Length: 195
Image (cartoon, rainbow, N blue to C red; front, side, top):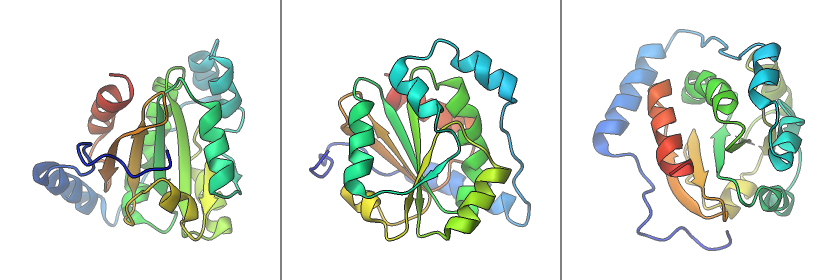
C-alpha cells in the first residue's frame, strides 16, 4: 500500500466511458439526486451472516469518522482477505451527489463479499453529516479535510474517485469521475473487486 500503483494497472476510464460519465452527470444537473438506500429490513437480511471483519464495518454504517492516514491504513489492514472499494466524495461535489445513490445500492448488494469505505475530502463536517443523513450508506466515511489520506493512497486530485483494492490491499483500478449508471459501477465491482 505504500508504493504507487504499478504503471500497468488501469487508472483512468477510457475516452468513451469518460464521455458517457460526463453526459450522465450533465443530464442530472439541476436535478436533486434521490436516496436509493434499501430499507433497514433489507439491509439486515442482506448482511445476515456477514464475516466478522465485514460485520464490524457494517456496525459503523453511515458514520463520519475522523482520523489520519495511519488510522485509515489500520482499518484497511483489518480488511485483508477481502476486496475493498473506496469512494472519495464530498457533499459539495455535484458528480459525487449524482453517483452516491449507486453506492447506497451496491454496498448492500455486495457487502457480504466486498468492504466499502467512504473518503470525505475537502468538506465541511456539518455539510457531510447532513448529506449522509439524506443519503445513508452501510459503511463509514473517513474525514479527509486536507486530503492526507487520499495522498497516502495515491488517489488523483479529482472528485469523485473510486479505488478498487484486492484482498492483499493492492490497488487494482482507479475510476476517475462519476459513474454514469448503476450497471457501470456493478460491472467494475465484478471486474476489479470480485474477479
